[in-house]
Length: 103
Image (cartoon, rainbow, N blue to C red):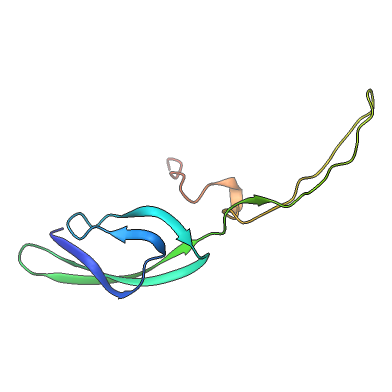
């Protein structure tokens, strides 16, 4: 790739596009939600191609449990923590960023 830039849309806050490498990077500052963009790349012969994509920004992971019950020595105890935000689990427990298994 020779050059890359956004033809339409806006990257989420905190992210930038390096036009020389085509790398989108940074630390997202939000807000959470989907940011549709159209990226355009141009090669050394001025051939151009555009592609639409969306970058999903997830809300920061936050524990919402504010208190836990007391426990008595020698007594079984269980408690459930609640949280919001983060990345939603995918079927099979695979992370969206994890490589696919062979085969």
